[in-house]
Image (cartoon, rainbow over all chains, first blue to last red; front, side):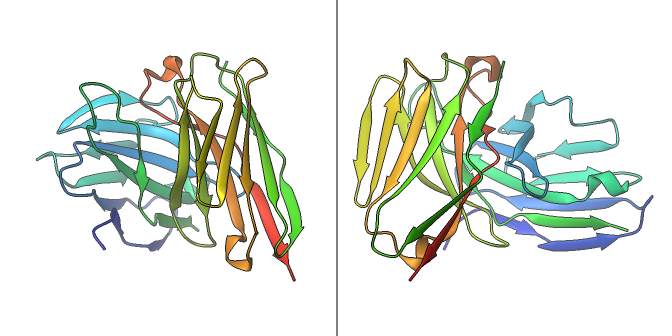
Length: 117
Length: 113
């Protein structure tokens, strides 16, 4: 199965610590997205990349959050000085270019569940 | 504004049809999606419909779109216990540059014998 993979699947950390998550998209998908999902809610958009360029960031992405996709393949999401409110599932998705425009399908990974104590 | 609403819970008997409903607000949305999420897992893309269509069928799944009322539904025929999950409706509006998906809070489908 060559779906989107995320690592780690679970992370427990103490408030104030830094954490980093990794996402490996489906091969040759040039768009990569990060979403956050809190309990009982649907995913909320955080940011997305086209190749290595970060094209949009949500207002949800405070300055403690940074995402990179240095070579246009895997991506990392780092949260500095974690807070209890950061506890959530962090989902990564990737999307292929199907036509000249429109990346119609977003395929999600299994997510990284973050618990901040 | 961007808002997608779904009922929170649906319970059906195994073998019956399930209908999950969704309303969205942004008429500019080009595509509308249904995703399935099982416990502890990511989201699985089930199907999606282009906004100029009013129906799409894919095996046991039928999507109906009423663009005038901004209403989307997902019908699952012959519902099985393996269909128990949370189902998310999502839109892809112009306000998001046609890039990001806006999700509802999800409908939890419980299938009982």
